Length: 580
Image (cartoon, rainbow, N blue to C red):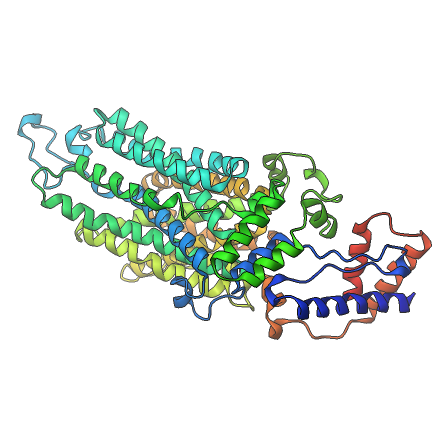
């Protein structure tokens, strides 16, 4: 029995080495052959997993050498570079739509004891001045902001479900069209009710596009690029926020400039990416494969390989083909669609993801990040009352870049990984929020900025973390649910900052951040196993323990005692233990 075990492991390694010499390296490794000692037919399955095929087409599997080159997408092949730049332009347009309200809403505080005809004219036109949202009607100005986040609550969930059902590309393209239409409609709103309805529609469409765009970009790159890609997209978001400032200054120089002109100009700017998105955005091959279109996914990858000039990889894909969902499920027990998938088998993506405890743990992390991020941002605006609005908005946008760099730096460290990095960011951010309640008033602003920096970095990181925790079949739905929970935090953040004292608010934010660190460390798995798989220095070189050897012998004897294995799943498990 021991001899049969060693022969099975040796045969698999020999097939892997010979295949690696016969085909280009990025093509991946073949699956194990069945050994006669296990009474299985000796067959060689040369088809590829969809993950290995995507990485082979990308060529550069490992993470970039530095964060700066990674954020500039240095090393990405030509086709993927065009697609990622298109996704970045979508992110810029969505951020521009979000932060237009910084200059269009405004605040108007006239002397209420005087008649409206005698009220002074403000320097900057806004909806608060045009519709007289003052003197007891200030809540209507806040309701317009809440309408946008309430729409984002709906769009976060529905966008993920629609992206899993109809694909990522249609949601991005049609969503961008509807987003531009809703912004232009808001520019011609006759009253505040219609304007709030348009902002609600913009928020719903915007969040749906953001989710589908992020998932589409992530599914075209290897796992080693996830953290860098997330940082690149968040940097694009900061660029979109920063772009609002020159647009507002330009409109302010025009004689007919006002909030309506700025809104219409912002809608026109959001329409610019539509000129090239139709021929630069391609549907995710992972989504095609998950939906059962194996031939379509393989054809798309072959087209991309040939477009990049990798004809050897294209020929290898045509020769090998892709594994079907049944083949991959049999070799990866415990995943959706496998015989041991458990409670989620046969259910819709929404029902499958609801069974996962990781969803609720990740949702709590998203809720805390959104609540603390928007809450501290509202509190930080009070600290910058003496600054011009353009300078304050620029500073807020530029502060996002160090957070993205910090998140990407920690997530890509092999010793930290995803779970430890996210835990550290929440832990340090929570400590800064708690310490703000006990330090002097001179250090309070610094602690607030530090807390926002680390929590924003955690917010950047959990996008990558959540995308790797959930499988492709439910990834869009899971990210939509997490974002939906985050929108709840963003909706109640303004009320918390108004109803509670600053010290109580920061203490609440710090407590939730520390609790999120505990939940992340104890309830979520580590997903950065690709670092050990691809980095020879990070591999475990310890010899197999006697316990592992005895496990192989016991499993082999149990298989022999019961005859041949009943399924390939049992054989796959045996081969995994034999390799260990």
